[in-house]
Length: 362
Picture (cartoon, rainbow, N blue to C red):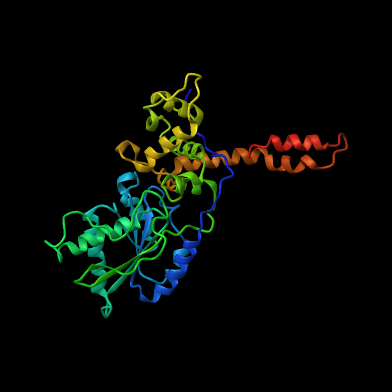
């Protein structure tokens, strides 16, 4: 029998926001600095290009010239031509980068210098940039790389070949909690930058968006149940490749069951106890971490459901359309609404209503 991947993911009761005090403080700071800013560099994670787009930035810095940078290209299967196609209608400049790559940093600095050259009157205090984005998309890492590349020619011989950090970085969101002082990236022309904290949305639109953000590290590992994260990862991988190849190291056939997959992973890692049990959460964290960190090429991914539907074209869209039509034809919502209606044949009791609630899917 041909394997059919799940078309609908359960609407789990997970938090849809991780908006903190320093996020609000950062937005206020953006507004204060806006009159000084000549160019905005907005970073989005190329593994979740739509979910890591923050509309709050356009409300505060919407009138500023913007360069959109899609980071972590080494961890993503998204193609640069797809990204450029998305931005053609918006007339936005866009680049596909690795925040640690010196070659990519040189391209960004050259793009900024080209912007400087097109100005009718050079800024008297130097061209000022602001790097913004969701938490943990690579802002501080990019600042360090730009600083190293932009200053290496001017300070050659006076610094070591080791990249000295001017901004703190880390594998979890929230390392940068306040907007930095001005950092010089180049002397000729004079280019300066502000490193800023990642800013989350007050609320995201659905469960899938929040899970995509958790898979790319925009929220802390402990914020959402790791088994739910692993289940969403399985769901997303099956939509992209229903053969089961992304997890073929652990199980020899495709599956929709996260329990079956986690058990197979535990067996593969020799972590089953004598009674057949295993650390479910630890196993889920391990598997999610492989994809989040992407240390090997086989763990490159795309976790944004909307992006997958857009890229894979009509095939997946038609599948989702058929599923929605099937559910609508069943008129489940009408049946649920009519459960408590008065009936001439039989009155529904409190016990009936209790079992109705138990039998609901979500």
